[in-house]
Length: 51
Image (cartoon, rainbow, N blue to C red; front, side, top):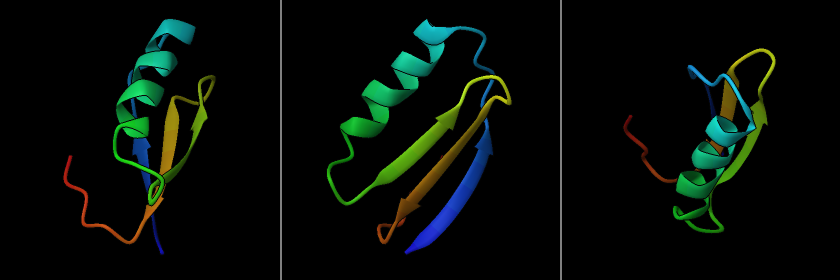
C-alpha cells in the first residue's frame, strides 16, 4: 500500500469531520489518519488517488 501525506487547511473539528466524510466515501480500500493540530492527513491505498 502506498502512503501519502497531505497538509490540509483544517482549523476545527468541523473541518476534520468534512475531510473524514469525503475520505469515507472512497471505500474500505482507503485507510486514513487525521492530525488536526498539525493539519496533516495521511492516506494509504492501493488505488490511484489524485488531489
